[in-house]
Length: 410
Ligand code: CTP
Image 1 (cartoon, rainbow, N blue to C red):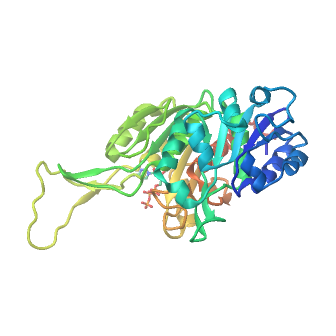
Image 2 (spheres, protein in one colour):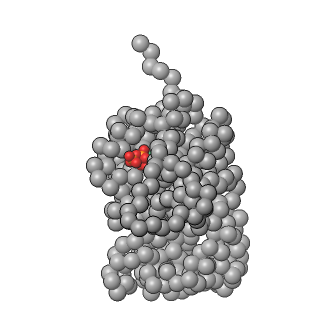
Image 3 (cartoon, protein in one colour):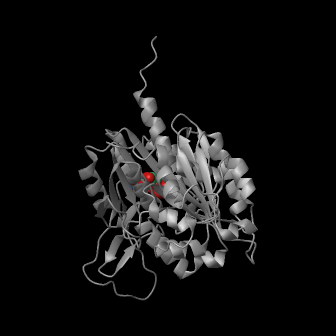
């Protein structure tokens, strides 16, 4: 864990049951050496006392715009200027709505407007509330405004009828590592050209039909976004998708595996890191019909020919420093992924099984195992795809650092 010595972290705690977890967040940040100040909303006091946060943070707690604890009438400005990061945890649906329209009707929303620091918002709420269109629209708006969102996870909820659902505050360690990334690692990929392939491919059968798969591109888009946030020059090459195009990346669209191969090869010469999340079709119809295929009586057989294995081909001439593959396996995952790792000359491979809960194609979370070429097998807990992206990039940094170590004498 990277230390946070000399980092000023302001935490706004809005009134949800997850507020009790923010106590652990404050403790963990203090352990890492950060100076922490907490502001709590009126309703937070129903869940956790001021004294708890004051004791853990070793600083007075601000409880309202004019609570009497302040040294002047501009405490929000002081805190807004003082902090290197402003974390709202947990963020209620009410807070999200007010922040999305720029309201400044309490200490936390006013500080949000007054700060130039990085802002990290950690929503937590009942799953029905989280899934409401208006809440999702507010989240989108906040992202467009430049605030970073730590997406809630699936899990046991205090207020869900089913007992489980979306809306649970992520593990505190995940929030701590997001804070560390914001504060320490924003530029750790500066100067690196990262190619990310994403989404499905489409192999045409005739003018109206094609073969494809269930990939949505979410994992690749998360990687592209996080790599750009961490300073990389990013080329995102993607198959058809319904996602918002990430800002600040070179965005190239493809359909077939052959197009993907041509575009990647064109971009590869000065590439430093290749992250191949695309779900590439291994076969294509032998001929693409010029006219719509008409039905006939009886069975129908489509003749298919092999597509190139793009990653294996690039692996043969590997000039980039790091190649990462993504293996999709529904059985014998580790054995099959390990074979792909060596056959495609990869530095590591990220294995996932779409049949596992939390790892489905269109989901926002993933459960992955990272297998390195030195034989290390590391199964990670269920995380948001963004969190997986950060973890994958941290591994890439390890590979780069190991590669730049001088060889031991002897
Ligand atoms: N890949 C590729 N070109 C292909 C097929 C796959 O570059 N024609 C890449 C994928 O982008 C992924 C990795 O290889 O990073 C593993 O893909 P996966 O579909 O899991 O495996 P395959 O090699 O296609 O093997 P199989 O279908 O037999 O599991």
